[in-house]
Image (cartoon, rainbow, N blue to C red; front, side, top):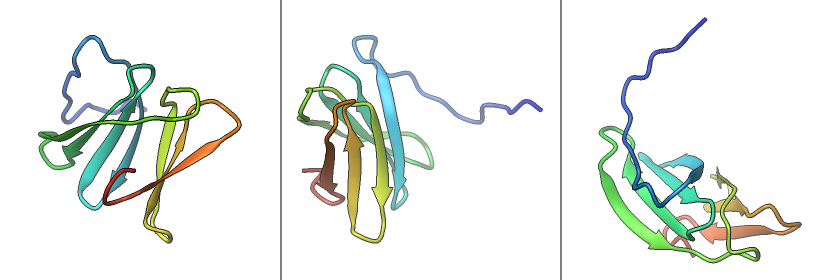
Length: 90
């Protein structure tokens, strides 16, 4: 079975999009080595926010949303997980 792409956007070439998570009608994406994150409207993929972030390794690998604790859990490939408030992204 194959799936059709319904909608997509390109991110600027200097970024390697790594992890992405859905939260509250938005998609939160992190980049691998550039320490930038992006928040998109999940309906039309319009960019809502471009934000810097820091992790132990200064990289972004994976992100998921923990709805029970109102936070994102972020991996940078190290032995540490990073917990970001889902409103402030800090």
